[in-house]
Length: 217
Image (tube, rainbow, N blue to C red; front, side, top):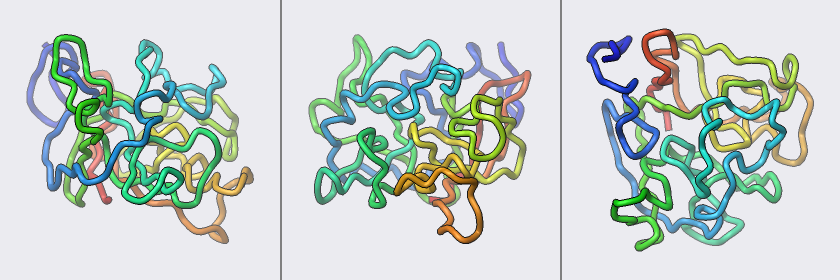
């Protein structure tokens, strides 16, 4: 039995759900928007694949497609009203984070697969939504601030962003939107700030590996 840092108990470190996100408070479950074809086929991780830079939370994941707990993004490269994970072919200015996916797009064995059937992927959004994430970045990916591959530490109050791999990160220089146009220098105030996905409410610790954030999208 695991005692959760913000109250409550659960066996298995709150990993019993079929997805990789624990919902505590939800403002909106949004299912508007069609999933892109690569939302069912992308590798995990999809963009930054150098092993030394890959999040340890993805270590045991071999499933393709967007994952519950990853960031839902607009995908104008596919057309109007499409969402998916990050564009793995090139950083695109129109790809903006809009929420956190609730389910794996391909579903799970012995369950219904509504994503495949409907072509839609619901995501949670709305300022005030509070979610616990089992997948998030654990390393500096691009080395723009500090050393690439260095471990990240999350603290209560950190602002978090969408990484190039479509996961939450607290390193602003690693934000997907900062990389648009091939920008690789350290983030400065002269560049448009990336979308703030949320604020860390409970950082991973010895009691739970979940990263809990209050959403701001």
